[in-house]
Length: 322
Image (tube, rainbow, N blue to C red; front, side, top):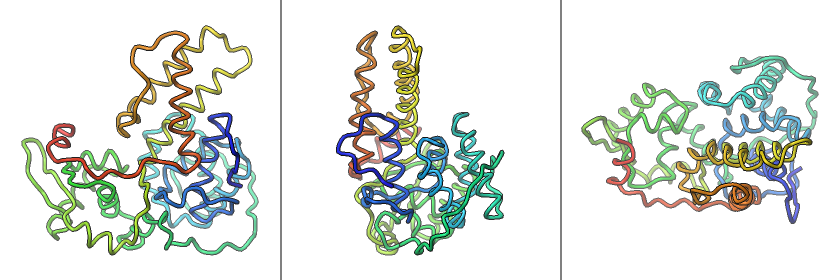
């Protein structure tokens, strides 16, 4: 059940609420719709839920049920790529989930290890409502197929006036550079993307935005990079667990907090979030991490995100990419 807490006290509870909010949009039974304004991305959500594991047994079971029933809505290739870049605890948790889904759905998700006992609820489920704004990315796949082509277009929809290389798109979508380059070139030949040659690579931008938006349907207010959101949420959960573990030494708190900040840095940079001030030391570190978590994961868990700002200019993007 999605949480309706007025106040959430731990990062772990917030992480569970964030996952619940996304799963409810995918059709999992829950009490509240907190993320109806968010575009849901299933593969990072599945990996993050696997990391949470037994933290919330009902979330684990309902998400497993959804995967068994709706595996056709999930890109196995993208799962494999994201899994290859995931930390060991995510890989371990996903191995159990994948084995459980494979055994009951007769499929071959990558990374499977040992399945766990699971009984599907047996309750009839209505089909996923693809007309929801939150289902924009699944609608895109329905139109263009489970393909790198759909992921190229999904990359550009939250952005405007962006010129990027195939390598950049590949890094952010979880597909190979080769497959992204082929699809980007095809879309450029069709006039959907614009292309320019830089000193080092071909750069692409979305040309026919309005036509694509008309085809896909209304987009939600929030179109986050879920992999980065979940990377931040995972580090906040882990550092809180480490600090709260019985026998944890008070002197280790700043070290653990600093480690969490360093681990979150790539995601913070990608999302252009305001990070805690550099140069913090000692007793100032954990309060800074705690406040950062409140302003990020705390808000995301309640369904409050950052509206998409489509204002990135070509010159600035080219400098960052090249």
